[in-house]
Image (cartoon, rainbow over all chains, first blue to last red; front, side):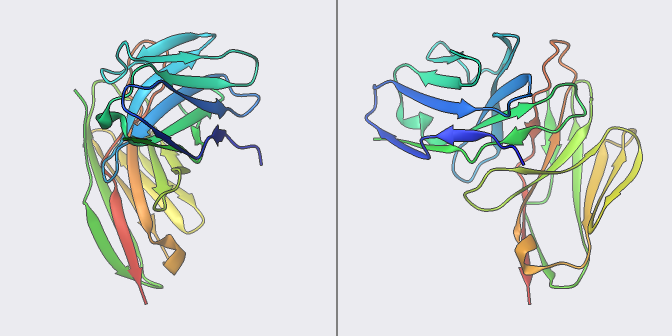
Length: 114
Length: 113
């Protein structure tokens, strides 16, 4: 069964450094998402991406965040200058589209900011 | 705004039936999803409801009442591997053509022998 893959599984970075989290969505999916989950808290929406542009973003997704689909398969999340509070599990998800299609999640990248 | 409530923790016995409730208040509604999340892992899709009523899928069933803003997930014949967090998530109607999920805090289910 096709799956969403994310790399790396764990990223440790010094505060203030830039990080890029990578995702390969399921190949025939059209909608892409990033979510984060701070340890012990709920899963929170960051951004959705469709047709090579952001379709919606949350308040969390400020100017320090950006997303890109640099080629036909990868979908990346960049955090320009990391803060301690960015430490979380970051999940990429994709769906075929429309509201009744489930989103399939990758295994996540655990980001630890020191 | 969006508000999704579910119990924090539940405990049930192996072989039993458990019902996990979820109430929601959202601006617009395009459906409700249930996901299972084992500790340290990704959420995995269990069920989707957009119309009132019961959807059954093997040992798992999900119910929705749109007028009451209420859903429940029913797990039958509990197994030890069902110990996990169960996440209720709603797709609001943002009008932007995006179908992002708004999650509740999750219900941590512990299945005991």
